[in-house]
Length: 394
Length: 102
Image (tube, rainbow over the protein chains, first blue to last red):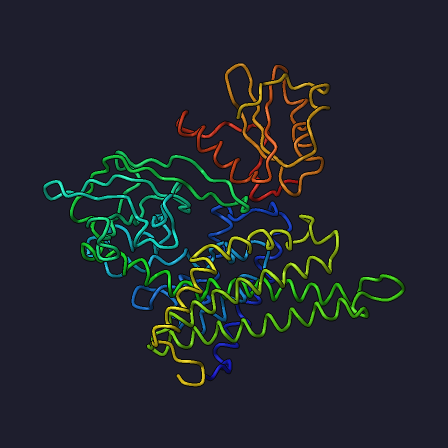
């Protein structure tokens, strides 16, 4: 385990930090406090700058024109990019590119031309439809959406829920069962479905703690797609889904920590200036202990998250490390922001400060991308089946 | 939105809460604006609706309190677009994403 930050990484951190403080934070004085989107001209102005920085499409491999960063560097930058009001779910309002649709890199040349490249050029939007009303934590068993062959076509029927961005997307990756219900993960196939395909309906928006965001419910009624819509191999869709989910959990965890770092810094600053009972808050032991608990949470979670990132870069199995990072980062960040609110008192729960938004959105983070309990199952499986090696034994 | 339409008058606005939420404005031709009272709005729904008082005679309004004002707002605009093929004309509104909601 070696986690020193290199000079190059330090330069990139400084670059992104400056971008956040000079380009993003000033915008947020004017935006609604729950906003997650920028108007097209403002976003274009920002992406021009990130392209000049060489960091546009930050999650995209170099051969596809992206920044091609290693996971540790990407994780460090994720901690910087989230340090503003909308930063948890909309880091820098997507000025560094849209979320990765990595599955499309494995598509056919025709699929890349039609879907991948337009996404990379920000000309098309996509959605990722895995979760169903029957459950999201165990998709191998929960998926009931079915795709049946009809000649060379496939007919899809079923429902999806909590699907982000489907109401504005041009197409989506839809995971459907092509084997029988007992086939588990080997019976799931990924299809690319155009949003204007007859039978595809965005049934409703689901309103959640995130006001600026619209997860949706989808219905597929006899949605006919050609054989060319299959992404990857028939029956191999589950591997496509989990590969993305596992690696995405590292920047996902790092984003939580960035927000918590910012909240902690705000709490330290406020504690040093706010007077109460004849002294500053910082002079009261109760406040000092809260700040120390924040520091412990942040340092431990940061190290565990960077360890997962380094493990991913090493080419060795990293599922357990990622699960641990996802647990500690989301849980610790929630505690840190909660304490920061407590230190700020009444101001902490107003929309004048970003803390209340982070508090709401961090609550979702303990569920999204695999709940804390699901991650614990992953870790415990490895512990109990003898595959896991402790930190000092790796 | 299930609340009834009310004439846009000072008396009717006096009963509107200063809370977060969404609202619609209509004239005899139908809905002409969909807006929200967001986190920066002074006096919430009531404050935002008061901006419409002197716009023109014969307007009506209806509103809905919700903390999910942005996602609900986008849902209402999308539903309107699906029905009419284009967004409402929004004569009294600048781009809230640029101008904030003060």
